[in-house]
Amino acid sequence: MSSKEEHAVAFYAERSRAAKQDYILKGPKAGTFSAQMPAFSNTSLCLVPSLRTGPACAKARTSVYQYKLMQRSESEKCINT
Image (cartoon, rainbow, N blue to C red; front, side, top):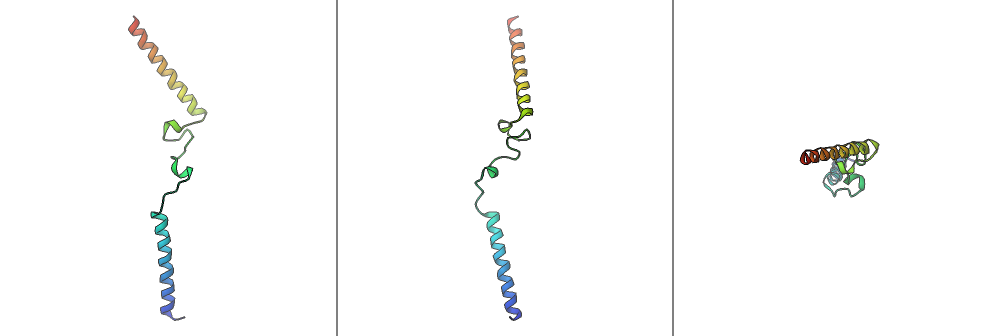
């Protein structure tokens, strides 16, 4: 094989590799569960509050709920007096 032929083979291989990489980067989006959900889904670190689960989150939700109930009862006391 001459040097021109070797160069042509290397050029086409590089061009083919670049086309595959371009398709990977610009191709269709993944439709899997893990690709569509936010990072740390269903953990206490999740950025979406409605998707947080676990004992730490349940405790935090309970304390927030109790705090809101306490505020409500205090505001009702102020209105009733």
